[in-house]
Length: 107
Ligand SMILES: [Cu+2]
Image 1 (cartoon, protein in one colour):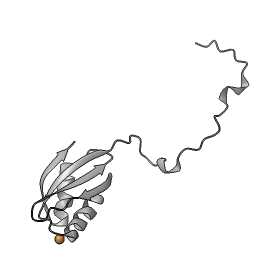
Image 2: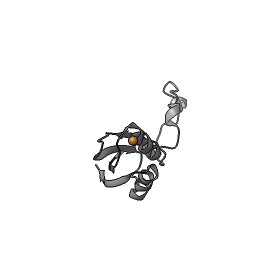
Image 3: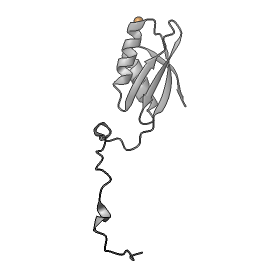
């Protein structure tokens, strides 16, 4: 260590000055997608899907919500997020939409 020739002024030249991707410049340090599947009870139509999607999408760190409507049964709702979601937050959101959480599965 410390035995560099010291006579190389081009040591800090840049590799073409590539700009940082502007959209990745937010506050995401770790980009690991977490998938949570929530079995929601009581959804019967597209409006139900809309309500649940809206409420879950409003949760912090949620990136994507997709509902597989199973009218009259349990509809699996897949929630993709940056971090592991809190069960209580999920239940509260579904409850807010007017439905019940039957189960929460994580990959
Ligand atoms: Cu409905």
